Image (cartoon, rainbow, N blue to C red; front, side):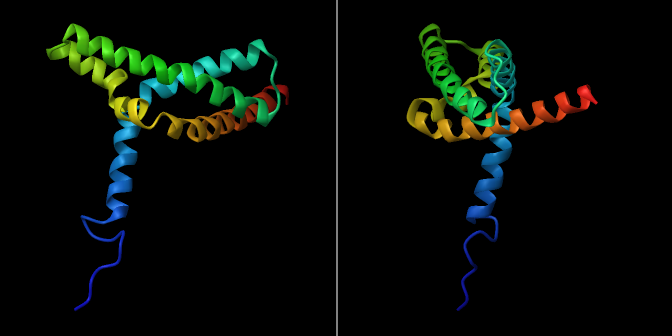
Amino acid sequence: MLRPAVGFGPSGVGAAIITTYFLVLVFGAFLSVVFAFLLRLLMDLFHAEELWEWAVAGIVLSIPMTYAVRGASRVTDTIGLQGASRQIAVFLFLGVRGIAEHHALLGLPVAALTAAVLFLIHRAFSQNAES
């Protein structure tokens, strides 16, 4: 009897990865925009022009953002948000609550890679502006 390989079919690992990717894309969108905005402000403030500076700053910035999500989730539990307010909170920041509360270190390499990509985008646009 042949068994399907891991990653194929509706119950495979590949389906789980794709599902997780799209859920994070939707529920992490607001925090990603906030991260990009704050990182860009910090890099302009410190006049950072190197990839490693952006990556380190991304890691450093992700730490208070993780604690902010943790705090916001505790506040929403304490005040007992219901209805539309709860749905807005879930969409804005509670979608990544489980990662922030249980796997906080997982965000560090992701923050560094995201900051590196943002650096490359910044550099490409600044080179176009100078031309």
